[in-house]
Image 1 (spheres, one colour):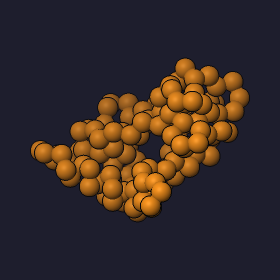
Image 2: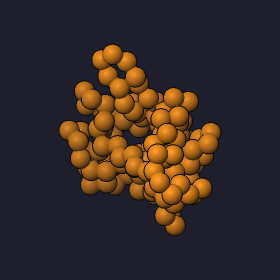
Image 3: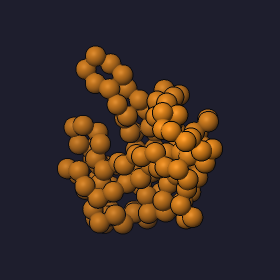
Image 4: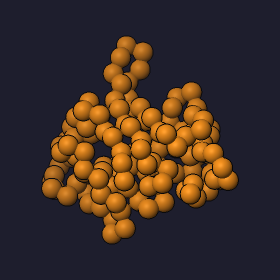
Length: 122
């Protein structure tokens, strides 16, 4: 699986992880896709103590990223960046699987017969 976490996004995520008490070496970030948003799918990013048994684990620098099997096809090739400007700040997702995104960039849709029921494109 190929995902890219930019240096700035990795720094921000590692800062969040270090801020949680009782830091464990297996702690990382769970990156997922869930039903919702104005285009059918939305990105979900959370701190996780450890991967689930069926997660794919991707390392980006010093950051562990956990991805569930249903989200993996929809996240293949994604670039996660962090924007910090006068007008906006937050994580920005550039997804080659998205055929349309909403104005805020937090939700997307895919081509083909994919439905917003969490079924990955093939």
